[in-house]
Length: 190
Image (tube, rainbow, N blue to C red):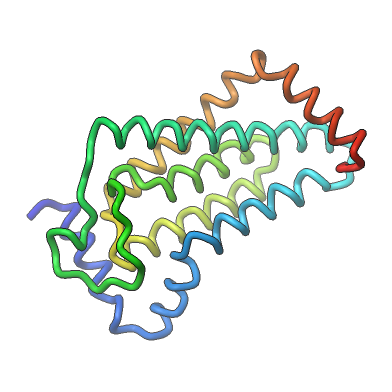
């Protein structure tokens, strides 16, 4: 048995046996809590009133681009390679529904780390907070039996590459960012 499977079995062995951790994992693992929290943090950054608000808004738009790129990377990867979920071949303590898409790379980790990687250069505190949320989200998915640790690592790397790619696209996307910020201003969304 490889290290990835061994780590999975160690982490997942606590599921179903540790009620307080199970409750926390069920809260964090779902498809809504962490993504919604990350999105609300972007909204707060967009509306944060201070002299650097324009840079914050551009960072929010860059994060949206990074999330789109991360999802595109995962989709392309899934078209080329399919890895069964841990519960397919193993007896696991499953605390979540049974997703049917490829386990590798983790889309949840890719999106969470795309958020964090895109925001961190603009706002280190918020970037770290997002990275912690993405890490908890990812760990909870291993704990709950729906991802192997390597799936998480692969997704995190893809998310950070997506964030880096969004920065490389700044020059190309600057007119779109300016237009979006201008339209938001005219609509009173600033």
